[in-house]
Image 1 (cartoon, helix red, strand yellow):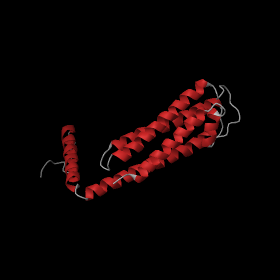
Image 2 (image 1 turned 90 degrees about the vertical axis):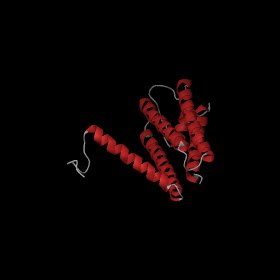
Image 3 (image 1 turned 60 degrees about the vertical axis):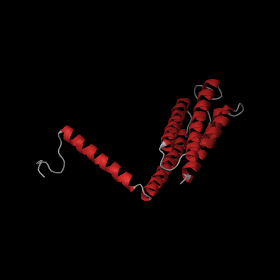
Image 4 (image 1 turned 180 degrees about the vertical axis):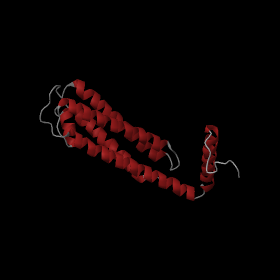
Length: 184
C-alpha cells in the first residue's frame, strides 16, 4: 500500500520551501518578499538590510536544504512500502529541520524588529505539525493493515519481547511488579 497522503504532503512542503528559497534569492524582492509570501508585512527594520547577502544566502540555503529533505521523503514514499521505516525517519528529519528554520526566522525577525512574524510562523508550525500527525496516522494505519493480513504473529512476538524486556528491567532495578511478595 502506497502512502498517498504522505507523498502528497511531502511533495507539498518540498515545493513550498523550494519556492520560498527561490523567492528569497530573487534580487528584486529577497527576504522581504519571502516573508510576505508567508504572510508577514515588512514595514521597517532596525539593523541589517534584508537584501544583504549575509542575510539572504544562509536563509536561502536553509530553505533549500529543507526542500531537499522533504523531496527525499517524497522519493522514499514512492520507493518503499508501508512496513519500511525509512520514510518515517526522513520525514521526521525534514519536519524537525523545517521547524528549526521557521524558529530561526522568528528569532531573526524579532532581532530586525519585524512585527507580526510570530503569528505567521506559528500558523506555519501548526500546519507542519498537522502534516506530521497526518503522516504518522497514515503510517500506523498501513502498518495495522499489514499486521491484520498475516503479521499478527510478528506483532505478538514483538509485544512478548517488550514485556520480557520490561520484566527484566524491573528485576534488575529491584522493583517488583503486580505481586510484591514474590510468590506465584
